Length: 106
Image (cartoon, rainbow, N blue to C red; front, side):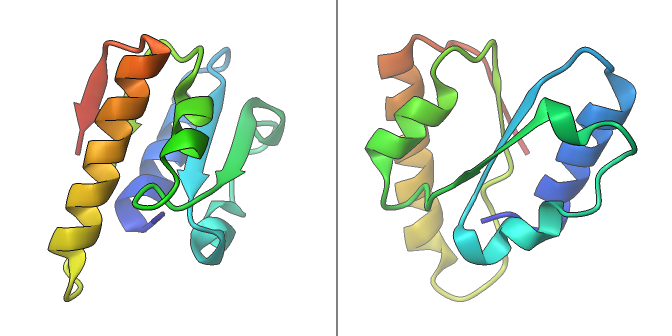
């Protein structure tokens, strides 16, 4: 999902790099966290609603054509271990199938 770290990573990427296009993947219930973006940055932000833990094919489409992925999968809620492991496994598989070789995990 999109939490505090993810929303700040997206905002910083858009604010610091004028030519950077950002695809932000988040579960539908977390997408509202992306509402406040730097002025003029909205056109460079693509929002993709899916659950990384359950939608491997959607995740592959989301990372396809990317130069790199910044993963902020993580939280402190009970049960995260299972959800986080599945999301990370799906992300690595999607990146492999899409030919994306660089990842930064936060």
